[in-house]
Length: 315
Image 1 (cartoon, helix red, strand yellow):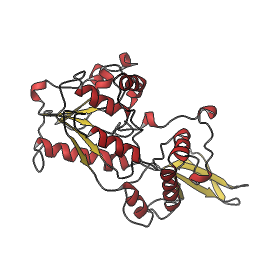
Image 2 (cartoon, rainbow, N blue to C red; image 1 turned 135 degrees about the horizontal axis):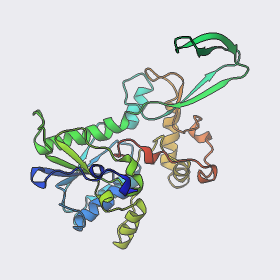
Image 3 (spheres, one colour; image 1 turned 180 degrees about the vertical axis):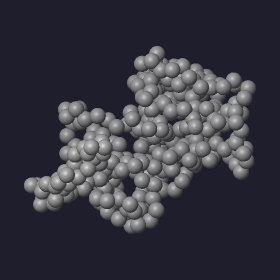
Image 4 (cartoon, helix red, strand yellow; image 1 turned 120 degrees about the horizontal axis):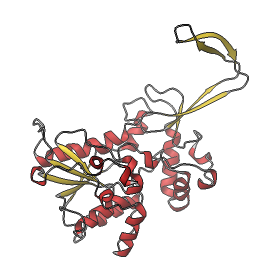
């Protein structure tokens, strides 16, 4: 898999003398935790100057407990900075009441009732689609889609970027045209599709787990070999990318988080600016407490996490 990737995608790191800051983007999940601890053991280097955790305010309690452990004495030889752009849960509720909001990849459900006249299109002489008539819907038509996502950028990427610029002395200053920051991202070999280059001239992204050809399973094995606790999955409680298996585990093992997700799911149904139809956290576009959470593998369901576009959540 790695051999099919362009060499520049595996490591776009400039000469080390140009780098003034090495920072690890810490999600406090399996991969980024493994990466941080491997650096502490000297198995990946050079040693990062710090790690940055961007707190959405809606992580499971287990994630915050794990983060506290990582920040405890004698675990990591470098500091962890915690940044935030606000509480995504509170902002989501406010958005449902008409306030401005950063959209999450929620699912929409639009129902066109039976008896509605729908246009019929065909290709015109100039190649454009034109209405040539209409048909009457014999039954209700239900359309399910996913709205545009802004949450990763607003609650993860931007706060981390702002802190990095502060640490390297670029706040309020013009950015250099050459890389001075190396950002480590904990994407593993099995998630290489999530690798994205930096769009900033002053920063390069690096994926040390990819360089080491480590999969998520390898990370779990490394943690067990070194008697470290297994981190929880780092993702917002109500993230619509959750698989049915994840929702089911939440329902069975974390009833408080499950009740919170149901409450938010109910609260976000309507009221958002620019959104037609109803919003849902579950991909079936039905209320979360009514969703079919039977075994996802039995039904061939794909996990949306590997295609999460920025590689900043869930690691």
